Image (cartoon, rainbow, N blue to C red; front, side, top):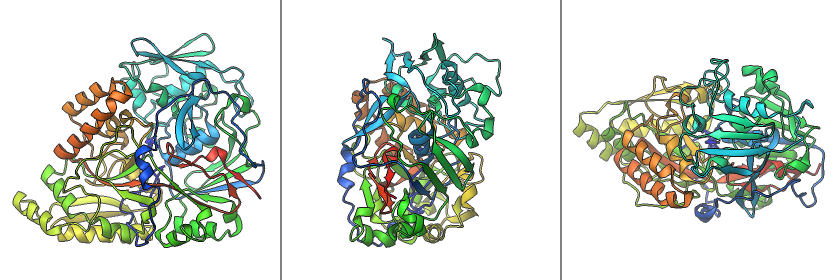
Length: 589
């Protein structure tokens, strides 16, 4: 969860989770620092699919950790919602899954690798022989943050809310619509209050049964998403629910100023003995949204005021690279990520030969340098999937999709002249209140103009940017939809169908609004395979889409980084959520 924040290397855009943190592509920057990307080699072997269905709570204590104090988390993005039905950004997903909303399954990081384990369920789910049902038995004695009991029907209602695309689930995942019986037609409990959704049923007071339209071997990985958290119907306040939810995790929401600040305090009804994943050391947690990464990271590294108790989850600014690789390397963490960024091109409005011309002209190096993207934060991308995905296979980069270099404007202009497309207009949004984004856009615009394009760059504020690019009917033809993707689990079925099936076009979670019947048929075929057998087939499909269709240009594979104050302890990076394992952090003062 795309789909998970989109961790932005230069804070230029926002990425659907798996979605993704709300961050950005090379409207970012290549950085002029000389930092060595020491974790780059780990990208190819970071993710290992494994389960431990017998793991019990409580989570082991962190050596030396103590309870108390306030932890501050600085996030440059502005996730569109904190409602569990609509969460599909890496940052909002991480805050939700680590602190607020427990789900059926969850990940435990063991020696840097994600292992699927039980959360609210006993075990990690059981598929039927034909793979068309998955059964989960729920743990007993669970309570919400208001002291009321968790009931089996609350899980059903929580899933039903995730179909309310006109409301609480506006930017949420589409897996449930693709996987569950009745999902294609069901509109959620607000539009269809009397409808009986057939995709999930109950047995007794402790068992959930999910009914699938096709075999999905990785369905129990999907069950770690916020859509699988229980929501009591009587407590549902629709779009206001995110401000005062009832939670099952170790913290509850004190207040939520949308786009600004989220304040959390302890949930006294959380029962650690049922939770094998989470610790809860800080008394309070303050999450600051839409901050400026450079100012935050400077404050953190200076240990100035609350900076000493702060972790910044953004990509390190290139101007600070020498500090975090030198004298203050103990205040910086780097590791593999699940995320990649793209430059989207609407396939319905930009012809294939023009899309390739954009690729030849694209000034990767100039954009990254202008945007301040440190070399610690990225590797140039040449595929649609991150290298840490199972079965990843690098192929010879296509000449129009190299992910690096200064661009060949002469080649691009010659292609436009041959096609009779000189003066073709490219339109896109950019965040005009971020100086580094403005600088990156100037570099982009200069090169594309030189190549013979007419550029209509539309300035918008950071507060409105995420929703603007998610609107499939927006008056733009480029950099629209998800600007990047962080796989939701480490198999190809959480990457390619989401980005390229066309199902997510209404929600702005596709690359280039691409939809192709032949490609969809191939994805359906691969998706029914055992994950190990499917892995090389997904890799072949990656190359096919890049060669035949080019709905987007691969920008870069982002690295997982964090900068933290001297009092923030146990900063271990989580390759699934592409940020620190937040539930294990503690503060020493």
